[in-house]
Amino acid sequence: MPDKHLSSRFDADLDFLSSRLLEMGGLVESQIAYALEAVKEFDTVLVDQVLEGEHRLNAMEIKIDEEVTNIIARRQPAARDLRFLMATSKCITNLERAGDEARKIVKRMRRIHANGGGLNVNTAEIKASGEMAMHILRRALDAFARMDTVAAAQIVHDDEAIDSEFRAFVRKLVTYMTEDPRTISMGLDYLFIAKAIERIGDHAKNIAEFVIYVVKGADVRHVSQEQLEREASGS
Image 1 (cartoon, rainbow, N blue to C red):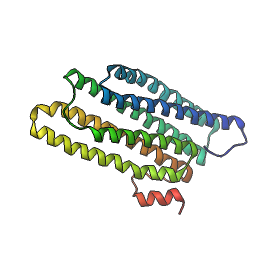
Image 2: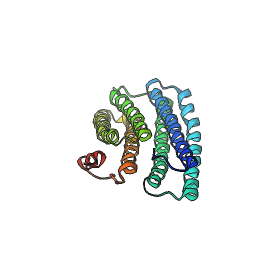
Image 3: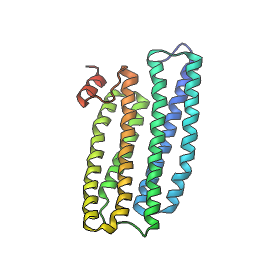
Image 4: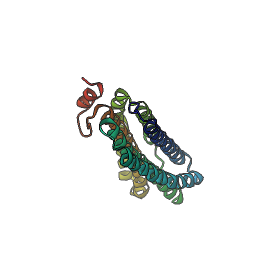
């Protein structure tokens, strides 16, 4: 959160935005958890829950963005306050897109289920990367709530582990599809699921990068990990 202001109402506005962002983040976490459970259990009820939650996420994004615009118009913020508001708007966009990825996962699982079930393939990498993506998103939201730049830099680094799991699963899928061309269609569905999980990790990483932007005033997108860590630590 930005520092306290002479206007208590301004502080209340910023606190409200922060709480709403975290509320939206909690809903996205639930969406991802339901989606991962659907991958494990082939549960069509979970599919319906995720699709219903998507509408709530879209409405929350619009409402929070409207509040950001109203605060900018009323308060004409500068420096860190303006960065906080801009970052909030971008973070809720990333949260909404992470929710979109959960929707993509369950829609693919519904298609797999309709086609008779899954491949006889170990999906350990999907499960592992899904748990990592959820954990990283939770940590990114916590870092945003505390404006913890050191934690944010570590999250960006840890996202590499999700990418590694994705690449491992792709290699496995290619082997299965090469050995049995009949599995290609379903294999591609699993590939889209794995890619969706990777993208969730990317959105969590983006949120972490915005923490550094708010606190340090540095845009650390597309920079090396070493430079990002220097900016985060202020060295």
